[in-house]
Image (tube, rainbow, N blue to C red; front, top):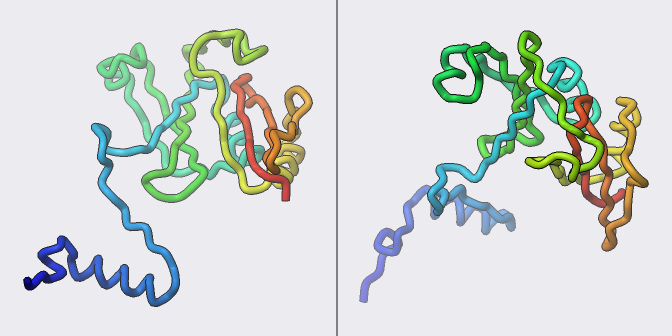
Amino acid sequence: MNISLYSCGFRFPTLLVAAAAALAGGLVVLAAEPTGEFSSGRIDLGIVVKDAERSAAFLTNAIGFKEVRGFAVTGDLGRKIGLIDGHPVQVRVFVLDEGEAATRVKVLSFPSAPGQSPDQQWIHSTLGMRYVTLYVKDVNRALDRLKQANVKLLGETPVDLGGGTWLVAVKDPDGNFFELIGPKK
């Protein structure tokens, strides 16, 4: 029986990359097409805020996001989509990591049509999406960043979750909850 690498589904570039990785002693994870009904596993979160500049400063300085190119939505497009009642908006976009798979936080502000703030005292005070959990490599570094940005910690955080994992809880300028979880180094 004569079996070639091509008949097994291998292609030369893929085989070459795998062989080079094996020789280098490394591990290469080849990007695969999503297997479910979604075209991407990425989730983007939209947060409507009172002051986009203040929220941008919180996300970049206090949390550690990086701002990337945003985009504009015309009032007409927003109305057609069914999310905005005719107000144009500039969407600012923030990421924690590089690449297309990185989750994006989209920040929108409508100064000419300010929304109402929900009860943000506790996560159970208002129904809906209530908090964002971010996994950090070093909680101490996150705490330093939060302190430099004058962000108040919630409750008795940081709290030891066991197994070397700690949780820090904070709110952004509009009262949205953020959890930062990871080890202390």
